[in-house]
Image 1 (cartoon, rainbow, N blue to C red):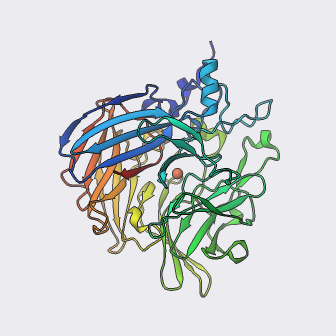
Image 2: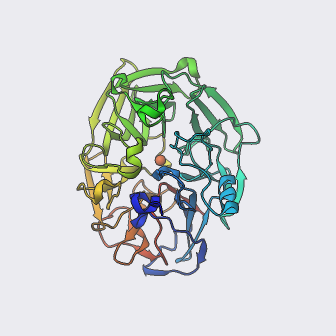
Image 3: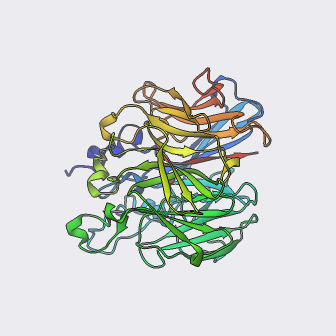
Length: 463
Ligand SMILES: [Fe+2]
């Protein structure tokens, strides 16, 4: 008997292990009281391999699974379902994994590719889209979580779509991009309020890279090119498709939203990597971008598939870039010294000045070098202060999400929603925290019937 990947890969164990049942649980136990004003559904996506992987597994590879928590009239309901990709259908027919991991470039045949749809789930123009950055969106039915199928904007989207589109709260547009290791390396897209793809613009970049996120303001978009370089030369010797080349520095490409590729101005800053920007905005002739910044990135090496080595030196911290459009130059300022990921702002502030931000954090390196965060942090970036709610060692949290009390409520008047693993119960809870007092008495805790594996991103859809 050979060793199974799930015996040796930490991303298949503990609360990273997949949950392989799909189901519905109505009227969940609630400790405290779900606010009556909070009506809607929180959707969350994450990797959840349906079968024992046939080769080396990377956390980013698993089949997408959507978890939906619906709050209505003070009651809470849960449902979960796989993103039903064509690749998953093949594997179900075969009764085992068929696709190698995304990073398995050593296969004797050309690597086959599955649109796992495993990274984010967004609602735009009455469509619920599961996203993964190497492929088209996958449209889902919001009521049943059934997979409708890949969505290509009526044949207009050629190429992949980032998992981090930006929804402009003023125009209703969805701004996004797609990157590729093959030309064109980067394309910018705009879907209008009605969900029609109205613009596609190839953007020239200096090298092909894995670009996970970008930032937008009222007037500009900011492309972020880090020195993680796609390279298909000597793949076997180097052991992967990415190389970390810090001598290149990091480049920030600022483009007017009314302009195009010819108008992109590139600004240089220190080498770094980032998965996620918190937000960006215009500030008197400058563009401010707040990001969760890694000094370097080790996470995409083949070694990292089983041993991510996520620790003090290799984790992200909140950081601010101020790009001076008038005089040129980027000022680069740390905002915090606590390890963080999954930064978010109030969605009504996207592209506009934000005072508050939220992230999953951890205060000590632990958990065998795994990317596990055990607290939620709320930043007051105007005062330069932060408040932390801790959930205890081993009780990992996901991406925190602020939901306003009403459309017109103040920026911090609402709730922070976060999914937390309870190691003692080996199950997850959905916490509703007071946006103005996240460390105080929780508003409610929804007790879920089982654990939800650590995953990626979620969003709230009001009803
Ligand atoms: Fe992400």
